[in-house]
Length: 391
Ligand SMILES: Nc1nc2c(c(=O)[nH]1)N[C@H]1C(S)=C(S)[C@@H](COP(=O)(O)OP(=O)(O)OC[C@H]3O[C@@H](n4cnc5c(N)ncnc54)[C@H](O)[C@@H]3O)O[C@H]1N2
Ligand code: MOO
Image (tube, rainbow, N blue to C red; front, side):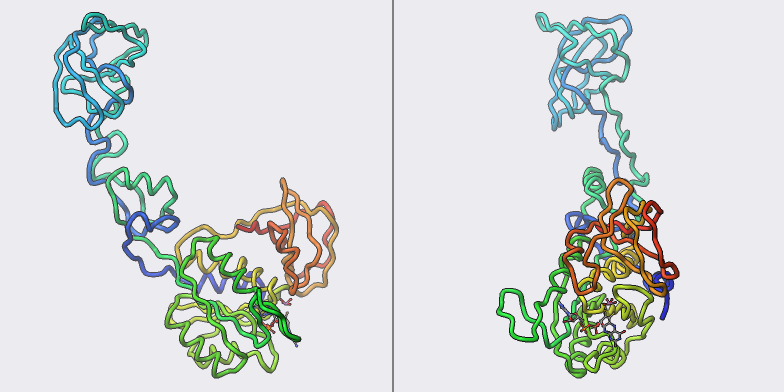
């Protein structure tokens, strides 16, 4: 069995970014750029007013101007003014030729077609945005590796870009194993359990922006599971299996993966929950065998699947790890790293009850996982522990 850190290192070593694709900017939110983007024109594309007022050619001594025309935003007529002349202008409109300054309309009086300026702070260039002052043609707008936040998308649209090359989100298949599973909403026969893993996983994937999710169900039979895994591998970048990864007579995930030509990277991690976790690779596709207990599934998702997706998408958007002060004593045997469901507030963390891996009630209240190291047993109130903040 390997340690938690060894498992994470193996994921880091074996996962590389997906091939880039070109998408419309409207499809690019949250993705990472796989190209440098240079501006193809100056922005603003012309000298532009930032206020409603009057455009003038600034002269130290002159405070009275003759109004000769008007420029509104979108105005296409290229007018010009001379010394001593002013042009009515509105925010976003091009300055007329010869103008270099805009006086706010609050700082003037207009008497008989004459503009009288009363602005002690007026200086040359005031309220005029220079051509290319946001970015000039040919200059780097955003570099490869940047994440496309709403502001980044707006910025690129604002410089005229409508298509970008990005690393896509992976396509995910979830395979549910287990003859005992029953859909929520249906009556529960003796021996059945409600299927909850696909619900939790779908929500967790949606939370990180993954939309392409396909669910498969497989009975506990090696042939059926092998066929299902084969199909899922054809259709996705990552396959998440839940259940069937332990040592029981009906646990066929390891054998089915072998039959599908998946290379095992690791099986079993010194951790609780999620000890029988499996990770394998077939060419560039990733296969996670998540131990079936609902809390093990989510704990492994946040610790390992999220990490793998971060590498696949070239995105640093991983689970945030930080330190916190433990609010109560906690004891565990040595030998396994424990991930406790916890509540993190203002630098302190409280372990919740119901830590067993078949229970989700405390996970449903938790906002973090508390990492208690493998080789330690006694954790005292007031000491510093590592926590993984959940997305
Ligand atoms: N002899 C041993 N037995 C077990 C060991 C071991 O080391 N030696 N490890 C235990 C640990 S730890 C875990 S975790 C489980 C993991 O087992 P599997 O991955 O094979 O999972 P299953 O046996 O198929 O299911 C476990 C549990 O989860 C329920 N389940 C499964 N799928 C779903 C679902 N989609 N929604 C809700 N609940 C689900 C299933 O009914 C079982 O109750 O193995 C231990 N055994
Ligand atoms: O590792 Mo299992 O998930 O503790 O029950």
